[in-house]
Structure formats: structure tokens, C-alpha cells
Amino acid sequence: MTYLRKRSAQAAAQDDSSSVSVPDYLQKTYTWAYLNPKTVPFLSSAPVVAAILWGNANRLIRMTVAEIEEGQRVLQSAAVYGRFSTDLAKAVGRSGHLDVMDVAPIQVETARKRVEGFPQANVKLGDASIAQTNTPYDTVVCFFLLHEVPEDMKEKIVNAMLASVKPGGKIVFVDYHKPGKLHPLKPIMSKVFDWLEPFAKGLWHKEIQDYAHDAEAWHWTKETIFGGLYQKVVVTRLG
Ligand SMILES: C[S@@+](CC[C@H](N)C(=O)[O-])C[C@H]1O[C@@H](n2cnc3c(N)ncnc32)[C@H](O)[C@@H]1O
Image 1 (cartoon, rainbow, N blue to C red):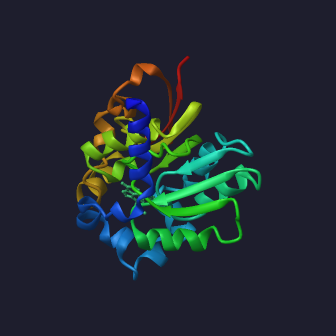
Image 2 (image 1 turned 90 degrees about the horizontal axis):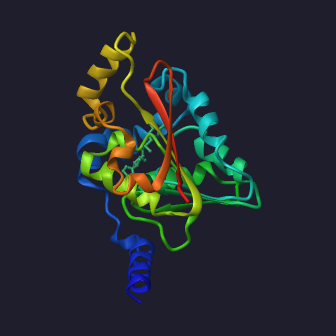
């Protein structure tokens, strides 16, 4: 009974998008990137995303999409600029379902336009730090979200995403990672993070699995990309 009551309370919280508000860290740090109607259309274009990721956007998207199977129910935990959502929608196909979630109404609007023409894709207002337990997913993807949030939110998001998959489901985290000592871009990225992305270096000092409350109940595989500047972590439940 207690379990059922807990599940339905979680489900009620999840469905109530009126309780979702734009978090302080987003307003204070990322208005220029995600909340300003004047900059969002420019920044959301594919060439800008390609430049920000040093030409690795397509490769990182391909590596994420490779984890998806046709017919799956997939959650994209936050909006991503460029072609990410449409590639995910194509991967689940007409027999699958993609939920794209974002905590910012302007991003929900932009993402809706992006997936027009893909009836299998739905865009909803929601906070990735709240578990989506109502209708759990086969796969949850968390693409370049963790580096943008403070440490306590990283922990909440990692645990909420783990709680949002079905038994046997999978979570795919793709994000920044501490590059090798001699990586030529390390000093530049260090300055960029200090200037514009103050929460990103958390991922230089901690493994994603260190944010999980019950990491030992899951199987974690980590692959680093582009000299270690990026990482892909795939998580499946053990047993
Ligand atoms: C996932 S990151 C993507 C960054 C990447 N540079 C890109 O290509 O777009 C940015 C998005 O995360 C959203 N976001 C931030 N905190 C969130 C949260 N707690 N829940 C859901 N979305 C969140 C922001 O509103 C923004 O649209």
C-alpha cells in the first residue's frame, strides 16, 4: 500500500506541469542561451551546435541514437538544439514514442516546431529532476544537461532518470568529461566553463555514477570521445 501510495503521489507530481517553474540556476546563468527570445532562434541552429561541440555534434548524436530501437518509448530529458530530437523521432519510428521534455516554456515551444511532422513525438513541460514514473520508458537520454546544472541538481536528475526507466530499461548520458592533460582544447574549455558554464567542471571532478544513490544496482559503461572531452555513459539495471 505504501509503495502504491508513493507511486501515485509521484505520478501526480509528474503530471502536474503547473508545479514546474524555471529554476534559478537557469535564469541566472543561462538566460542568454535558453530563455531569451532574441538569441534562441540563432543558437538553436545546427551549425551553431556543431561549432559549440567542436565539430562533434553529429558523431555524439549518432552515438546516442545508436542506443535506441524502433518501437521504443523514449524520454529526451531536456531540449537540445539542432537535429537531435528529429533523429530520435526517426529512430523510434511510427511504432514508437518520443517524449521531449524541458523546464522552460520557450524551449518547449521551439522543440514543438522542430518535431512537427513526427506524430510519434510529443513535447511537454517538465523538470528532469522529477522522476517520470507514471509511464516508464524503455530508454531515457540525457544529452548535455548535467553540465548545465548545479551539483545538487545533477544528483537529483541522475536519480530521477534512473527511476524513469522500466525494468530492463537503459539510460544514456552524453556530456562533457575531463579531457586528457595535454588536450589542446583543455585550457580553452577551462576558460569557457569558468566564464559561461560554472557548473560544467563538476563533471571534470566526478563520475556520473557517483551521483547515483544506488549505483551498485546498475551496470555502468563509460566511453570517452575526442581525447576525453566528452563522455557517453550507458546504464542498465542489474539482475
Ligand atoms: C539539454 S541542454 C542542451 C545543451 C546543448 N548545448 C544543446 O545542444 O542544446 C539545454 C536545455 O536544458 C533545459 N533544462 C535545464 N534544466 C532543466 C531541468 N531541470 N529539466 C528539464 N530541462 C532543463 C534548458 O531549458 C535547455 O533548453
